[in-house]
Structure formats: structure tokens, C-alpha cells
Image (tube, rainbow, N blue to C red; front, side, top):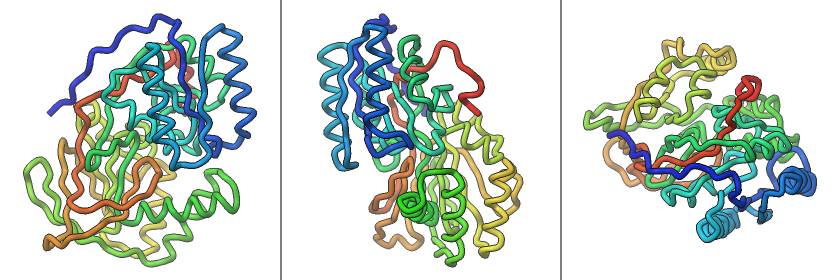
Length: 323
């Protein structure tokens, strides 16, 4: 079923911004980011309020503050941080009909780059002042929203290890790649899954299952079937059971945007996918949504939200911001 596009009001250009700023995201200090945002919006005479968040556990309450203030003042909810921060704030804003904006601060920033939103804080804040609303599709896993992808199995473990490496060696794409290579030295556990895809049953043995909701990420990996997303669906990716050398080869193909050519990678589009352990055992899986890892009880149900997110995007997109 296609997701419903809610009616979204046009921007008047005077709406106040209610900003949730994660002080732990990005390479610049929180005080620098705040100063840049205050300077850009203040110079334009645009009213704004900011809530600083130091602990991930406080993101949900800060998001509720932003949503309540934006509802009362007919304003815009803004998330400033990495993919996990954007997810946490979008989770609360989804379905309210309130305009939603981002100031991306993460490592890969697939969500922001998809819509040409600059990673530079000053340019991203300036883009808020001349933006239009684009209703964007949101994926769901057991009722929880994800903007870019959700996964089970090896991929959440890769993300956990990557975060540990970043805490020790800093945030960069090189650190992320090295941590992934080291994680794969440990032979990954194979999952035995039953998948009900749009009502049809199939069995799958794999180290990981990744469900994508982001055309840019899929394109960068070398997958061509992104039209499934345009038609209101999601895309599942899963490697067949292989050894560590083959997993390394797949990482190389992904870096070269050719993973979609690999014979040992399964991909398919769907509207609704229900995942259970083979044999129907009660299992809690380690899952990841937009880089944040948690545990969920099976069955795992992937689908598209009935609501679209009214995202502020630049009226004039610089192709370099999508690169």
C-alpha cells in the first residue's frame, strides 16, 4: 500500500525554529555549533530556541519539547546531530504534520545528502531560511521509524564496534572502514530466518539482513532497484553465507559502488516484510536503526509509515552537497 501524503502548509518564511542540538555529534564543539546557528539565524532576524542534549537518553524528551513548542508557535522542529539524533527527533515529529528540518553532523549523512542539505553548519542553517517542504518516505520496524536503514545480525555488530573505534580514534570514514574489517575477522553467526514478503514465505540463511529506505545509499553501494522506494516500498539486502574473505570482497565492491553485481548478495523490494527465526522460536534480536543499536523481540515487521515527514529542503541544491 502506498503511504499517505499528509497535507502540508506552505512555509511563510517567518516560522520560529525549535532546535534539538546533540552536543556529542560531529567534529566541531557544541559551543561553536551553537554560536554559528545563533549568528546565522539571528542575523536574519529569525526567532529560534535551542535545547542542548548531552546524553542520548535525553533526546526523546528534548524532541517532545521541540514538537510542543513548534505546535504552540506554528514553528519548525529542527534536529542537529548525526543520523541517530535525526532519527530520535523525527520519531516524535512523525505524524504531527509539523515541518521538520535537520542540521546534519554525522559521519556519512546519507539522509541529509539525499536532499542536498549541507553538512557545513553555517550553510545548513542558512538553507533553513530559504527552504521548501518536501514530504519524504519513512521506514518502520516494529512501529519505530528509520530514515536511512534498519538491520539485524552482523550489521548492528559492525555499528557497535565502529562506535567503540570512534570513541578511541575519532570520527572519520577511514576509522569506520578499519573497524569493519577488524569485526569481520571474527566469523559471523549465521541467522536462520523465515521471511513473509508481501504474503509470500521464503527461507533465508545469512549473517545479516539490511532494509534500506535511502536511494543515495543504495546507489553508492551499486544497487539499481531504487525505483522501489519511489513506488512506496523498501529494499532488503542480504549476503548469502560466505567466509571472511568473501565478506572482505563485498566491502571492496561496496566501496567501488558495485555490490549490486555480487552473485552472493540477495536484494528485493517489498511493501511489508515479516521476519521470524526459523522454527518460530522466541528470540530477541540485536537490531540497528540509523546507526543506533537496540534489541527487539521477533517477529520483526518492516514496512513504510502511513505518514510522510514534511522535510525542509533547500530551494537551490548544490550537487556537491549530495556527493
